[in-house]
Image 1 (cartoon, rainbow, N blue to C red):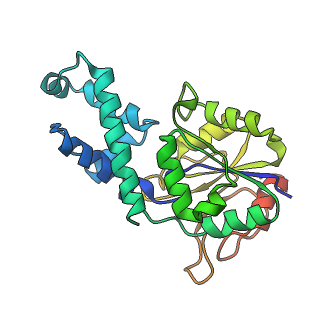
Image 2: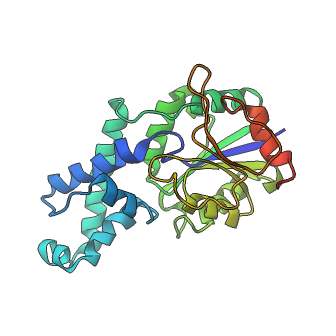
Length: 257
């Protein structure tokens, strides 16, 4: 049996990037009168940078932006902007504007019921991650899911630090731990920590290189929804219309092709 499932947050627990983080960033830029608005395409490029503060910091790479807002107190500005952005994001989550991804509640609740360890490992702000988790699986279930997030590690994904810390703190055996990610950066972070990784893609990450993933699927899926799309599968298991706990267990137990 699988002893641990470790989920990324953004793009995995919920479709946060398009419906949460992007509008929260833009609302923050508007609030502070910053001369920038990110389109969906531009934000897709920013997603290559791990961490919200780090994405904001990349604005200063543009000399015109730096000159317009002043760079002498850059660190203080970034802290203020990111705090406001986090508050805007949490409101979007609370208002039901950030939909959980199919299968998340089903899989996590079932795993907890069977005694599996379930955790979330993300380099997003911890308060944002907890808000998404509670919205996705309910506040009571969320109490059973430890969260490792934010600046708890010095380096963001694709650095493996967040997964190494999670495994260390929870005493996880890599042989019995499966990571659920949605991006190449996340896959590289999991692999760097010696953990197998299943990828559930989203609109921003679908075309990324997921070489090394155990399997790549469109979503975890739900009964009654259209069948999931299997983009890659290194196991010999034939996935059905939606993934089950047995499927996830097989992703650890199977010899990979």
